Length: 216
Image (cartoon, rainbow, N blue to C red; front, side, top):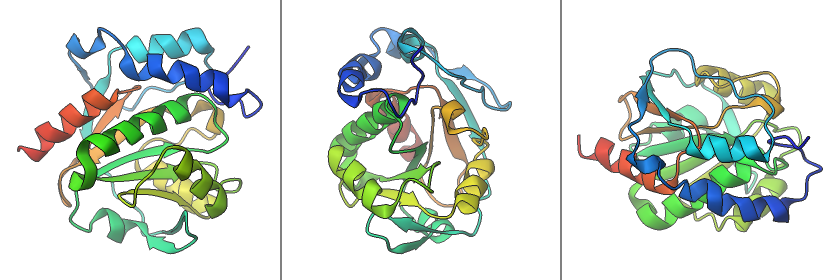
């Protein structure tokens, strides 16, 4: 059975499914569920499950996540002090991905690419690798190029223990990259709580949520 993130599964066939995932017809009219509890875990899924995930109601919550004081590396190999970067005054939108994933991660990255095109410099996009031992800066750079990442979208890797610390801080660590959650985090300014959206949110949904945050 195919899984969400089977590195052996061919990417082209799955990229064809991304259009279905990011369009998610009919879901935009459904209200987001409100849940302040721990996020739901996503186990191994086949492609039918992926389609169901795209249609499922999103779970919206807020949290004051305490970002650890770690240094990661960007796609150019330059060190990035994560806490300082996330507190630099720009609105932030963040997710967790890894480059050898061939299903949910490309879907999420395709959505970020659309958000980037829609919002431009209004928001700083950040994607952090949950498989940093494989995801070298060079691999991140190739991945970023595949999704037309602009300088406004920072992809980060680093030491495994630092990646795990960040995942734990955002209540997203599952111990196995095959079971990682599809979640997006955003906030309008440093010191504000993070809005967390569990599920495969479309570009329209993320842009709508960002504009709602920015207006308040």
